[in-house]
Length: 422
Ligand code: EPZ
Image (cartoon, rainbow, N blue to C red; front, side):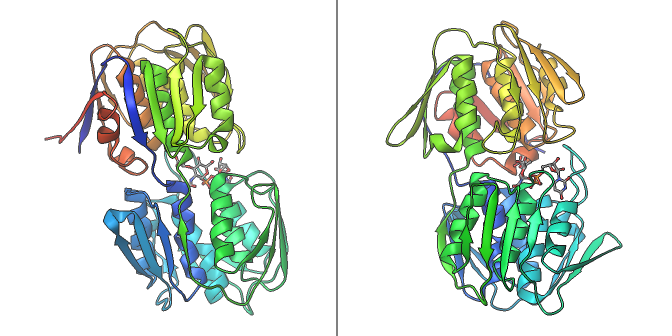
């Protein structure tokens, strides 16, 4: 297993290109199942999760071709040869559940392995199943698989989510495009990835209103056409790299960054003493003075502060003047990066869903272990600012969501390399 070695090397300077969004691409790809005609995605990120979704779709009989070094994904689901998503693929990536809604809508049946939990929480899929039942589907859980049927096809209905779920909103939205009649999704997720999915589905002929708000209305149609669609910029990769000059000093321009994708995050950065300026190429970020100020953060569904930037923000606050309180409201176990940061000299007390961070003058490089995708990059950010060398192990977590991290950070002056572990 590879390791990443980071050595604190002072302020950063230059530009970082931001890729297409992993979490948009992972819901746009299953949308191919809704149509017999080709769906092509451009600006796709080159990530292991995308390769896993490719394998899953191919196992169902979809043709998926990666072009231009992975930036273009050409798909065709003209001939679906299987309606079963097997455990050995689904267990690798929870987003596999997103084939359930489209398959049910197109074929009237689907068998999908339950995804199982993951490091950051149990992450059940009950809201996905309830939503599809509201469209007339019948769910039968047997031997770890969901056996879903929709005899006579899905019918429009009202879906009322008790709390916001990104994936369940995506499954419901895709399924509703081919349901007979009108579907209303209430308390829908408002993430930019939902908006991107709705825009793509509309290009395919779907009739959707209200994406980006809490209520989405869909008029079902008989069939969807093909389309070509650019994947929206990855707001989590964007926020991650915006934190690099914040924690190290200097000035970095994130190419492709858009302020509307990271509104709440930018407000917190400003409060902490970091300036963000919109340029015609993206977002330019620099620390205002010498010190970062402590700020309190609570994670919420969009447009609130994103849970996927909580670990990275914690790394910044470890070096702030004062005490910051971070509340993780979305997942039940998303502070696994804290003990690793403590190994680098951070002062963090975790009680349940609350982490209290007392800033220290400097962090010290140390061997640390990545525990999940966003924790891995939080440790790299801390390493950029630490005195000495930090060695991050288990970087396969990183490869799921960040392409070319070493190249992108080296490009702005970071001292970072990837070494193969014997
Ligand atoms: C998506 O996961 C993202 N993944 C996650 O990003 C992100 O953290 C999350 O949304 C929240 O923004 C993808 O888009 C592929 P949820 P998802 O359904 O859809 C509970 C990353 O780092 N819940 O909004 O699985 C759930 O356990 C990943 O890129 C149920 O209880 O998240 C969680 O506590 C990590 N039952 C909360 O709701 C359900 O049926 C929000 O989950 C569904 C969810």
